Length: 129
Image (cartoon, rainbow, N blue to C red):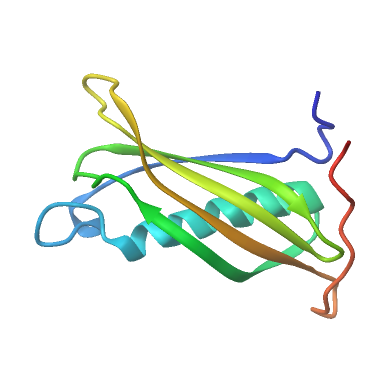
């Protein structure tokens, strides 16, 4: 069971409105990345209980388009911890609100750095064994 003080996951729900889409009616890639970064931020903040910033986004794979009117669920999980960094895996699922059909649409990895009050990197507790 996960220690409540250091949860390793965060979940975010969003709805795709017209202003989030391109001329094809599908989610802008940049909007997807912004939502994924927010989910990574929340997971890293919850785990470390520190100020965190994004240091890197690694390979992000877009599997299927997300259409206007669909809901997306982002699941961000702390998968590894360095001295001051945390690697967060973010999976984004699309869900049709009428049918409930779900599909993995995007997945990526983000590295977050914990900062102290002076905005200098600060140590993070290791992942539980």
